[in-house]
Length: 636
Image 1 (cartoon, rainbow, N blue to C red):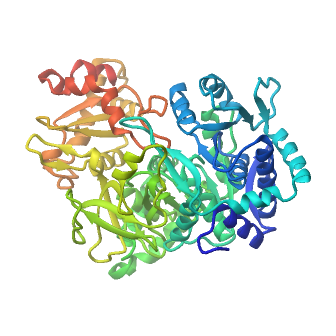
Image 2: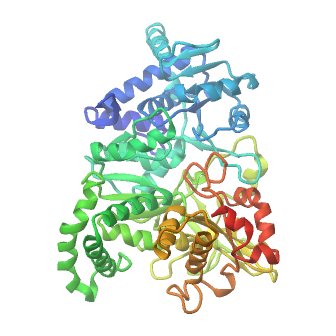
């Protein structure tokens, strides 16, 4: 294999090394079927030949939209083997305009879609004159004009290989490391989405870089929960598992997204994964479900669980300095792990060793929690423009609160607003240089030139390098998410937002806002179920729709915020001047359908502020500043 391999060379090499081992696991009916490395390679070649028979030329784009499944991976590899460029699309793209922009902007010649996504594609394709055919991944009876099934592509591939025995090998050999593999689109929070060009070498380099900070034993299985269209699932998921000779499984697809989500707990128990990829939203949901299960077992079990948790957290400290003078806690850690936490882990399959987290900042308390129950989340950091991994914690090196050790080989520096490098420990913009830096933005040279300067990728994220151990990077937030006071002082709000959300069962999401305003406000998504239970505890038999109940619930939210003020249990964690002086209680959850969270469940700040612009404006009036205003009362 070359020193700068393409994805094609990479896959061919590892499918040869691990030929008869299982690579793909997928549930069909009631049975989990296994596909070996060898069969993965051969099936990908067959699809590649089919794409060539269809007329796909080197460098041409193919859009792919489907739920996570074996055919997603095999189809993408088929596109790449044929010299094409895959344009992966999120299944969460509901609006025709979102799909339309990506398909048209990428100049896609073909679209591949699952049966569930086909109706959206049928509405979109008539406005995409360059699209010649839609390839359907499932067998359906109502194929329309210019639609073809993937099984027909396979048949065409078989015939093509017979008629042109050397053509596919020649096409595969013609692909170079700097040729595009994917065009993956940003969420488009402030303007049209940008198409990030990720090359073959971007991917293979980032897998090698990732291995410098975290490894995976050969026989491990990963359950991929995250969407396959994101490069995090590519690199940290199937390419990394291929590099280490492991296997991957996907969650069985339901008839609806909600049904697929319900299949997750069953998939975890049946696959019994060793490792999973996670984002904070998923981690928080796991934690809440675990705690609800413990609470259901009664007050004695809950009290013992809380004591065991407190003991383990105290012993683990910041992970890198575990134990120490607290060695005397170790026997209790082992005892409670066997009595309490082992059963918790059984609910997650019993073999789960760790999560690898990404997608957003992960609250330090959440890291401490999962480490205490024996399934540590090793937080990492990256972005699509970096393919995406920049750093990660791991069992061999972890500091809670950090985003981990930076990958090697890669250069990193922290720059001030003038672009000058600052010393370790000083906050500024994270800037990197390496083979994982994207090839640029598709058809957008201006944005490319503003983002990659002299080979350095300017991430737009804030952070600092650890003074005690410069391999570790601390990410503190986005430049664009900064709160700005009237006097120009700036503050990154993510720590408070995550702390309030993770630390309160009464609050599901929080977003702070201050754009040179007189004071900061908090937009709060309440957990109405928990608040309703609290109100019933205060007044037996209370009508939850009554004004009395609503006042109790709103005042509880206020008390959670006030816990960060002087006299509160969390006082001193965040600067007093940035704590919210007004609370906007929102009527419903942030959803992808509304565009308020992206595919990794990260809140899209700009869109939330635009969506609730009227509530924000109202909060800066005397009436709106009052907690018990009519809009908050109506929302609760």
